[in-house]
Image (tube, one colour):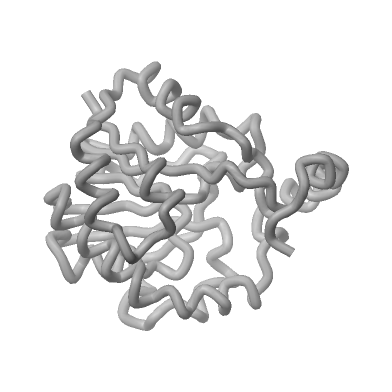
Length: 212
């Protein structure tokens, strides 16, 4: 079961949170990652178009999953990429061999220091963290970027989502507090470039920020 009623989500929050605290990967089975293999072609194209539209030279993807965006970015404008995912131990066997060396284990709710990158990508990841971890999440994203941030957090209530239901404006405000500037034109250009590749609710709510 993916979607769920908010009341059901709240009634199971503590048990799911406890499993997450033991190990964030507990919310993800190998079957979950295996099911994502069919997204390779479209996410490759989305990563390539991201790098071309925003002229991205280096890209770090927090919550990279199987690394398909990274693979696409390398086919486009990016010269170097890195992916970080808390589920590394369970997902790595499903990552294409050509991209495995670019993926590392890391938890966005804890301090991460992988240097500076031209662009930080974080799609559909922040909602998987506990609410108490969201400030560290945003700090990690801002600190890793030398120029751009591309971000989107899901709204839906889902048994793997520990921090859902927060609109685009909520997350934008967290970035603004850290001195970032929202790039409205780039959001529109990226949403257009991703048409036919990513779901409409992702494209309509994508955030592009410039680090100042």
